[in-house]
Every structure is written in structure tokens, then in C-alpha cells.
Amino acid sequence: MFEYIKYILNVVKKPLIIWVLAPGAYMMMLPMWFSGGEMQKMVEQKRATLESTMGQNELMLNTFGIKDWEAVWTLEGVITTYLFNLFFPMLIAIASLVLINKITAKAEEDGTFEFVAALPMTRMNIAFIHSGMVVVMGILLGQIWPHLIYLSQLFFADQMSETLKYCSLITAAFQSSLGAVSFAALGYAAGAVSGRSSRLWLFGLCFLAFEWTTSVFTIQVSFFDWYHNTISSFGAYVDPYNDGLSFGDVSLVSIKIILFLAIGIIGFKDRSLNLR
Image (tube, rainbow, N blue to C red; front, side, top):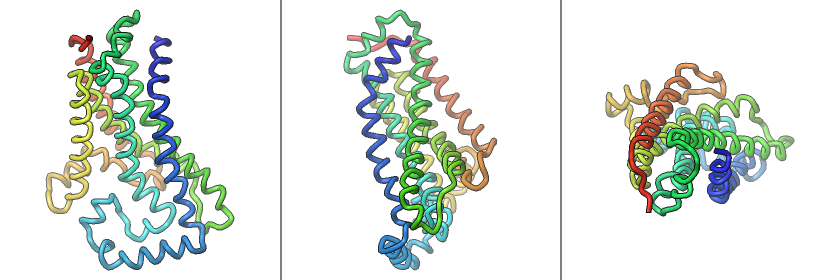
């Protein structure tokens, strides 16, 4: 088992570093825009430009996951009501699908899974390791990126009119990343059941796109409004930065993750592998 875990870490090491650093570099720049001077003026000019168009368009605000137009022009708001509400779960879900695909469905298609099949491990153990990696990768990225944001803020603390609270930031990031894990978990399940990476991407991204769509058209479609407020992983992210973790929302998303992973484990255990 430990040999296989070492193998997994070696396979995902390079893409994981890329996914940590590329979005991380962008996120580290966010505090700079609220550090005063010319950058702060640019933010204020952008707000004035968009006030009469995007600021009053409910559909456009929902498209970008913005719940509060006034709050989004503060450092706390842009991160907690914009970044964590939309782009965080999207980025983490896609990154998790990329990484888990390399060690599961794509490995079968490429013929590199024979090494795993030859290990003295049961199918169930392999499936549990894969399921654990889905959760660990999503939560890991969801913790590394906010730490980079907080680290960047420390360099501009003397110039900033507002600063982020560490515990609140990490809590909000955790709840946001759970939603991303639910999308990745369904993609993993589809790949585990079929052994095809195309199914992994189809189910993972389509589920993400569907739940994002329900959040955009909540006003126009009553079913979408119900789904977003009752079942959606996007809807389960409310305001953990200020209110802390919501037991109901965290439980809802956790149940979805467990259900999807269980489907993947059972499906992988009972099918024949695509070995060359």
C-alpha cells in the first residue's frame, strides 16, 4: 500500500506543483489591489465604470457568483463573495479531476495501470486510496491557496486599510473546497465505474456546469431556485467567513461526496480492468 501511495505522489507531483503555483500566483496579487495608491484608484475607477451596468444586472451578478455588489469591492468581499463562491470550487474541481484522472481512468487507458494490478492489494484497498486522494487533493489545494493570500497580505499590511482574519479565511476556504470535492468525486466515480477518462471529465464537468447554471438562473427558473437553495454545492456556500462553518451545509456536501465515492468504489470493485 505504501509503495502505491509513493507511486501516486510521484505521478501527481509535477502537475500538482503547477496547479499550486499558477493560480496561487494570481491569488497572491489580490491584496496588492487593496494596498492603497494607484492600484486602489484603479479598483475604484473600475467600480464606477461597472456600477450602472453590471452592478444593476442580477443575472450578471449571479453568473459571477457575486451576492453583494458593494461588498465585492473590498478585500474581504472579493475573496469571500466572489473568489470562494465561484472560482475556488471551479479551479479545485478541475485540478482534482486532472490529478485523479492521471492515476485512475487515464492510467488504465495508457496501460500504466498494470503496475497497480500487480501489487499485493485488493481492489477495495485501491479504490479506497483513490477515493482518499480525491478528498485530500481538493482540501489540500483549498488550504494552500488561502495561505498564499494571507502570506501576501502580510507584505502590504502597513499600507492596507483592511486585513483578512486568518481563521475566518481558512474556514471559508475549507467550506468552499468541499463543494469542489463533490464535483471531483462524481467525476472520479464515473471514471472508476467505466475505466474511461472521457466519462470522468463528462460527469465531473457537467455536474459542475449544471450546479453553476442553477445558481445563475435562480430568478428565472423556480426549480433551479429550489435546487440551488436545497441541494447545490454552490448553494451550500453561504457566508462561512463571518458566520463560521454551517453544520447543515457541510453535512449536505459531505453526504454527496460520500455517496459519489461509494458509487466509484463499488463500481471499480466489480468490473474488469482495461489492462493491455
